[in-house]
Image (cartoon, helix red, strand yellow):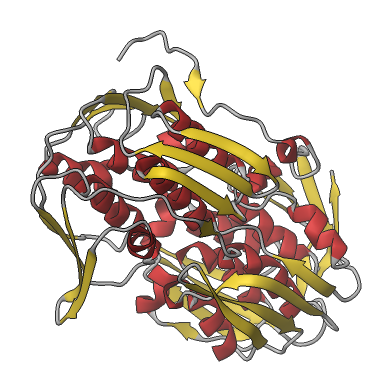
Length: 462
């Protein structure tokens, strides 16, 4: 790698990051009931995959409902750099013209804050005889990439970087061979990277996951014409893919992101008198762990208008203010709700009794150390919380309205889910709650403050 870097592909600044979520800080204040109907932004996981598979496929892929946050735009920029023609046709409407292969990019691929994008793109690029250099923002450069690089290395890819398993790094692909790989940690990103690399490998690639993770890549590969075999056995689920398959362009309709829908829905559950409906929400059973947990806590959640969208089930979820009780969340559920534990902790703060969340070590290496930040922020807001090495125990204070004291500023370390979680907490606290560095909200939920305001929330710039 050279010390003087060329211009970076995907270096974008969305309108959302200039206002109002991009203010120096935001404050959420207790207000009246939240009421209304909102549509969740497009699912981030599916949006990344739609762009990547569209670029790998031959022909034109039309996408509707694409999430237009910064993370996904970085992936769109990367696909252009690898030779695909990528056009934005209108709000959420994109067209990808792929050539069936990647070409070597001229510039560094800057993935910004997008961990999913970085790991999946490295897997896809490894299938081709090219060299590409990847980097990201300070947060992404601190996140582990070894979990993807190790299996790609077993397949025949090579890489070099200043640190063993961190960005920036250069990856050289091509000449891959299929592997039989057992996932050491539950990770749909690792599974997906291996499957994408396996498309261009010699022989069969087989992955065994002892704990089931989201299966969007398997579903979408089939929609693009690939043969993917999935078998359940005593040691877990095995996913097999033979190399040398080509993809054919297919239309994609991106459903609403359940991780994003969780914020207005939990806000309704904890704010007295509230009733909020979020439409078009993905109901994939491997993404539904939060809602199962909330129902076990006593949440009044109803699902209506269930329908199919491109092989995925979607529906409209309504949440009404509910008295909640603490529960022990099964550790085996973590993979289906790993991104939702911060907002679950907010619900737990308003429950009666303790909510025990364990098996969450993965949260230590997300955009931030989410266990530490949630524990510190909740404690500052007057909530009794115990931080464990791989878990949280939150003791709720449900004895009436507005029992969480609030009145604090939560440190987010630029983590979008931490910021949104504490803003939701502030809507039902006795005193306002502020967050710093809210600009990253735009990576997954562009227009978050506007949507919440349309439901009656009070979230103002500092």
